Amino acid sequence: MKVLTDNFVFSQSSLQTFTYCRRRFCLRFIDHLVWPAQISTSQHQVDIQSGTRFHQLVHQYFLGFDEDSLLKLASVDSDPRIHQWLSLFFQSCFSHLEGDLYPESSYTIRLDNHILTAKVDLLHIDKINTIRIYDWKTSRKLPSTEMLKRQFQ
Image (cartoon, rainbow, N blue to C red):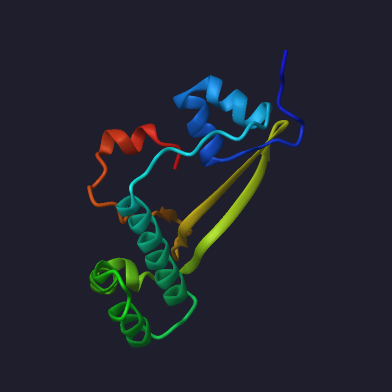
């Protein structure tokens, strides 16, 4: 019988893999076999890279970078959606949150004998100590509520 090591760290990816396919979880996380990457289009790769650049710009904003400078960077990006996304972000209430803000932060805890780790786009603690976690989405199609409920996020 194969088992996880005592120091195995459960992540969004490992939990989602387990839910999707227990056999794939076993091959990847217990047997440590390299699972072939899904075939993706070049457009899919562009979308992933663009989403990463958007996340980096928002992260820089929460670290204190100037809004105008970030918009200038976005305006010369090879993907025009970056400027549009960032402009919409700056127009939203999310760019004016008050309280303690922790962008692109990782958290790890031990639950009983298990280690769980998570990375969040933004952790927000307001003045009455309400904690909110924000996750920026840049996919071409807005994910459904049902799909998001099935995801380990």
